[in-house]
Length: 182
Image (cartoon, rainbow, N blue to C red; front, side):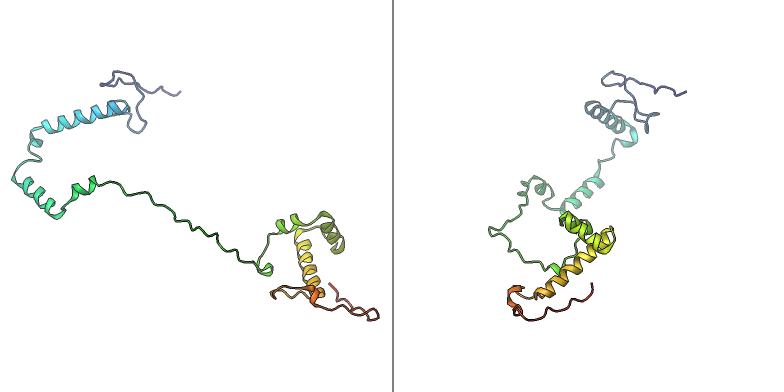
């Protein structure tokens, strides 16, 4: 059975409090800021009243030590009183950044992205064509079909314009080229 925590009385505010679990055996005052401030002041006064501590910061040795430190750190107190610097600001240029075209052959697109942007009939047609419903197979076939279509239309990736109109169509009596197997 769990024992309820002891609840001592704070000597400053006179209220009962539950001590911090890490300090429960020696915590004497509650955690209110006013009580902590009073506790700190009482502890400092008790420390300075002990006979061995009465001259702790006094004497010729302490005066020499403080003077030497002040000479080594000139302007220490002045630095603390200076106004705080202005907040850092990000400089934003007035011109918008120039958009650079991204070459589609250099961009690897996630499988879900490629599948999600395709019309369902095309995904279904590719799955019937390949005999597979796996995204890997459908996307790989889709990419091969795009490359094949560009080759047929004369669209060479990376050339300016990629104009399929630049290729002339054969005349009415010319035989059609035979397609290579996919």
